[in-house]
Length: 335
Image (spheres, rainbow, N blue to C red):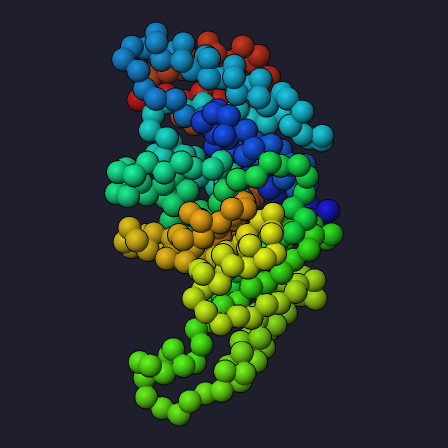
C-alpha cells in the first residue's frame, strides 16, 4: 500500500499517461497501470494525432488511433479498477498535452522516454520540460520496464520548498511501505565557497553536520514516516554527486524537486534537474514547486470537465468513433 491512503484524498486520484503508441512508450503505459492499481486511481490514456488535410482523412486517423488505444487499455494493464479512459486529440503534441494538464488537473503525468531532436528541443524544450514548467502536477519519466512496484527509491533533496514538495509527492504517489528509500543531499564544500568570499574558514565536518541536521528536520516536518529514510550527505557538485549516487545505489526511481519557473530556456527545469532528466538511467519523478496550493486542492474536489466541441463536424466525428456509448472514450479535433 502507498504511504497515503485513499481516505486522505478528497477525490480519487487521477493519473494521465500521454503516449505516442510507439514501442518505446509501452513501458510508460505499463507503469501507469501499476500506479493506478497501487493508488486506486482513475487512469486516462492520451494520444495526439497530427492534423491532416481533409476531414475524412482525419476521421479515419482518429478512428484508428482510438481503436489502438482502446486495445492497449484492454490488455492486462490493471488487476483492479475500471479500464482506463481513452482520449485522442488532434493537433500539436505539446500543446494538446499541456491543455489536457490545465483542463483536467491530474495528480500525476506519466511519459515515456524521450529521444532528443537536436534543433527543436534546443529551442523549444521537450514535452516533459514544458509540462514541469506548467507546474500543474509532478511528471514521471519512465525509462525501465514496469515489472512491479518501485522497490529502491532515491530522493535528491536540498533545503528548499521544492524539496519539501518532492517528499510529499513521493509519499503520496510512488512510495510503498516496503520500498528502500534513500535521501542524497549534495552541498558545495566550504573551501569552494571561501574562494569567492572573505572570512574565517568553516570546518567541513561542522558544515556537513549542519546539513545533516537540516535534512533530518525537513523529513521530520514533511514525511509521515521520517525514520524510513537512509540519509547520505556528500560534498560536491549536486548533479555530479546525484548521478554518482545513482550508479552506487542503483535505484528504480529518482525523485527530485525543481522550481520549474520557465523564465529562460536553460533554466526551464533548473540546471540540476535538467541534467538529471537527461542523464539519469532510472525512472525520474520531477516535482515542480506548485504555483499555489489552493487551486491544486480545489482541483481534487471537482470533477474534470469534458472537452467542448466547436463545430457540428467535430461532434459528428466524435459520435461516429464512440462505437460503445458506455465506453470511456473522448475524441477532440483541435486542428
